[in-house]
Length: 119
Image (cartoon, rainbow, N blue to C red; front, side, top):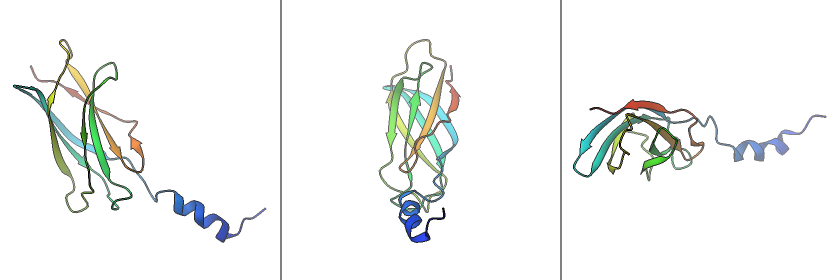
């Protein structure tokens, strides 16, 4: 049975076109007086308010969220872009964390970037 295109159009309109996760280009960590500071560079083909990189987070080895940087608006003319997060508490003995990105359209990415903490 073939469905008419008029029937399929609303379904296609409901799904984001070509939604893709935000790519973590690079990440750096440094010790600060109030914990750790993370500088994360993200690239994403922003389409506007319906699909943009809306955050990244730092995960411990056990998957616990140690810090989250919320991105409140699209960055279509600033690609890739870097944002920082300070005051992240890292438990003693942790030598490596993971950085995970999120987009409004796809949510948290299934991929992470492993980041070894400097001594």
